[in-house]
Length: 433
Ligand SMILES: *Cc1c(COP(=O)(O)O)cnc(C)c1O
Image 1: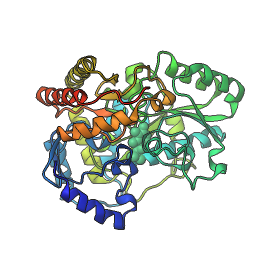
Image 2: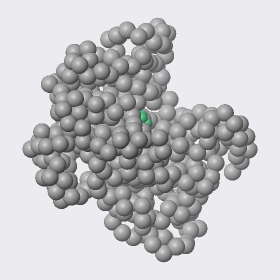
Image 3: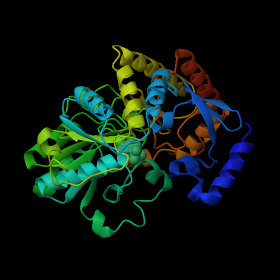
């Protein structure tokens, strides 16, 4: 595979941008390669600067559920762009996207648009603290909620990939109010809530963890969070930045039938443009300025181009049966992967919820961050590099999810499975688990 142009661009980028990238995981350090520089993408295919083409399972880390260059999204954005790109004054587009979100999620009466998932979670926590008058927050190990100071404790995704437990520059004073507990451990959570519940402002969770690989909630875990937060008057925040409109139109909360107090969204609701949002019950959202005293603002919040992309994306996702198509394609990939793995000499575990999949090189269960960390990441690196050679673009870290889009057809899935078979054939169990 030719990588000369990518290599040259990377060398140049490193002179002017820290690490050559604007978000750490993109540098591909944990898999020991250099990043590919992208030229363009179309449907489920992504093309790099050397003219190599790949079947893309990163999907810009989640947003591209319709595939790249979806004609309806392109058309909507182009039409809005023609009228101006930003006004710093309200447009009806913001209300239309808000209505689509509120219709999709019964737990949301009102929603505030921001520019990223990080902003959404950061603002949701400020709101929860203001409403409860409490400081302490609970998160779970391996859940990633963006890079706000208070949430950079035992976080997954890029933080896990880099092997740093938080980050320098985050004062202890700031994170002393953050408790990080093991994911999927209802008993541990219960113990903490019994002793400290009346001091807990909020509990924030990825209802399906997608930033330590894909780890579904075990039976009863989300129910325990809902029950105990209600009992202690703490606010339950579902971070559905990744799962919202991904695992179902109504997100993980509709899949599991659990109603959080606040929901954080981003990724899909921006259709590939920068957007975030947080929403919830009317009595909680009423605290946000200018309706209430909790300050939160944004120069580009509710940007018309981003709103148009989000509306066009959700409009298409409303098509009846569309999530069944996505489910069938994803199931085909999951079953195919399981078959190929069973016939290989490598132990691997495939986990899936809807169009999110995780692949772990292990012979054990993966239910939490500790489990995910004990998987053979060296094998993942070999696998990643092999797949790239075979024309399949995966996330350059085991601590990320594989995303199937509506642009992946059965042939794309089958072609992917042939690639997996070939790559696993060339791999042997190098290390003992
Ligand atoms: C991606 C992600 C975020 C952060 O969103 P950004 O737009 O990158 O700031 C937060 N929470 C979850 C669950 C995510 O997957």
